Image: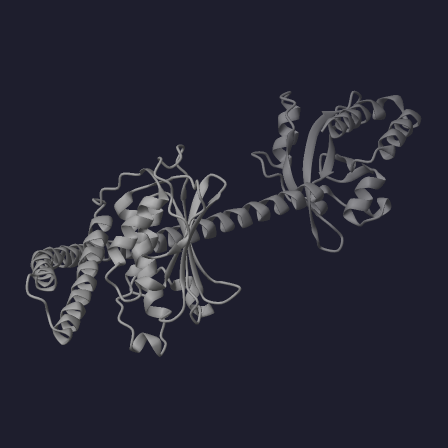
Length: 439
């Protein structure tokens, strides 16, 4: 620091000039030194202190009077440099003029060691050439405390860093272990998924194969039944009833096989759909012909406002949708009228099948269009069904960019509504059928 260098030079000047100019000037110089805040002193060649300032008294714990009765050796150990006190004196006498500065400790009166930066400079007086030593002792306590605090902080940071590195290594190890476990689990799941997909494919192939194999004999049986019914020889009443029953069961089995085949094609993405402008009256006519032989056909009431626009749909798919909805109504509403209606809702055309039965259980509504779902009720124990009709309705409607919903009608009964895109052209001339009952 500049301060202790200045003080040291002043001390050297006092030591050199003070003994020559006389005691008056010496006292003036001494007063200057005593006024500075840095601990300072002058001692003779034997180390006896001849001049001290209050700052040194405060730092050492001795009074100024006590200090002038002591030697430098009482306060300071030998310098930590390469020179002892004798070496300092000899070097000055030989004209080398070297001093010493460095860190050491000041021994206080209470035995405490005070860290100081000690600066010593040998000086020869101008008169009698006596060796004097001027010195300052800069207090390093604050600096040492700060260094200790910094060192402690550094050590804490180093310890924290080491702990973080350890934790990071542990985390990396655990992550690696978990990653390995997850990778193994993923591979196992992938293998299981592949197996399940293969089993599902085999199941679908089997169902499709069986359905195809059933289609041909069912067609032959159906043709044979029709020959019996409409042959040249009339059937007796009992025989006619039996043949009609067989024909109804053949129709039901045929529709079941067709449903299975359609689902297989949908799952495989191979069901051909050709949406085109389709008059709703044409769908009504196709359905009327399809259910004409059923005993419940007379319960259906067909409602279609005149001039109803065409729907953009695949004819076979839409016919299948409405047939499944009618079949569902026949089964679960064995009595009462069943209404089939249509109308326009913005850019969509809606088709609705409503019965007048007991309605739908509230807890069943969210699940009606799920595959193989059948509500557990007393009716289901006696009513034939496979849980696929409404499922394929939803799949076909969604495949044609439509929507289907089931709800209970406010006036009673179940109500199934489909929304499909409205065709840009109206129905061709051929007038939609007026509302009325199935012929």
